[in-house]
Image (cartoon, rainbow, N blue to C red; front, top):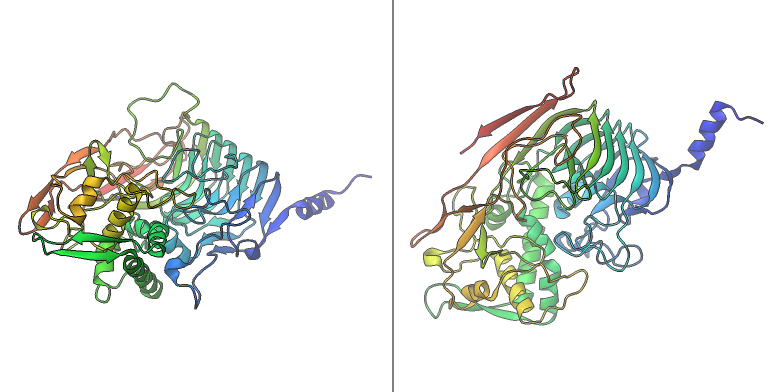
Length: 512
């Protein structure tokens, strides 16, 4: 007996796995089997939030039990929904999926949908995200609208090593970095999507991520009763012993102050919390690094400079990319250049990959973060924590465990000695044109195929950029003075030409 069309549609609907808010209240929902899935309610992702017993600074973290592997989730819930299987169809079914405002503030690395079991391929990224379990990319996957992917501290959709991805009829808004960003994808179609705008009320800069992500390290040292003597001034008597317990408490208090201010009024209160505002406030209210609509990048994360030549190795480049019939508007970002200390050819960064920031390039008032008068160390709570953690790593005090990896740390003993006893003449050299994670900044934004082989849709921007040496002068009575800031605002409006599908307009306003 033949079934009617209505009966067939009803049978298909019944076969779809229905996802509701309850499926996400405990954390990331992982799809690891083929099939059809659909949203059956709006989703606001913000698991394990603060309680009367748990402050915001210690909240939102995954429980490292069951499906939440310490490697994959070592930097927190990196996605609301993970698709790590072949042959998955996700229908947004007219619903909205987004981060909660609190989670978007405290989890600064996040995608609404991740098309792999981990956010990075093995041995790549600020930590080793792949443990005993294999890395599993999504293949033959469809993400279908109508529906909206909303607030996200990084991406709407992100993935690595994917094959045959179709994204259709989806609305994107309030992401900070990109609506869609896929690395080394073979077979991608993005069609009939609307990008209304990226997020334009971002309250913090990337340095706040460093404060959040380094917490497990200083917490461990506090539990061990660790302490470090810091030199604070030009005289021998200018020394103070700081304990990990005190620094951990101060770091948590600083994070909580930011959370309370932003949740109450959208910005850090400069009057009540002057130091938090000086370190973490975002004066432009858009992401302080590159931003995009759609990215089809080569193998690995899209964090380096634009290449001058396209690779002939098809194993490391995206291919068969079609981006058509989309509308993109109001993508804005601000390149906040972070001068990175360079020693022996290495950028000084902490174990989470965050740059050890000694000076900043923007903001009113004091731009010194660690470089004081005469080149003496004058730090802050975050830099003190980074120095103490680096010292403990060098001394072998901090073990290397999945959710507290030490490999990325490059802060060396010279930097530690400069901060703790003044025996090292820093004589700083800096490398610039990068953000707080030392991701290379771009003067032009490329909306469309970034490092992709297809020519259907908007073409790649031709501007080439790379890291450049910058100058920081140590002035006896002023501390560090940054002299070569590339501080500019980028505002992009994009509409496809109905005839060619290849029209886009870039507007740049110099704010120096």
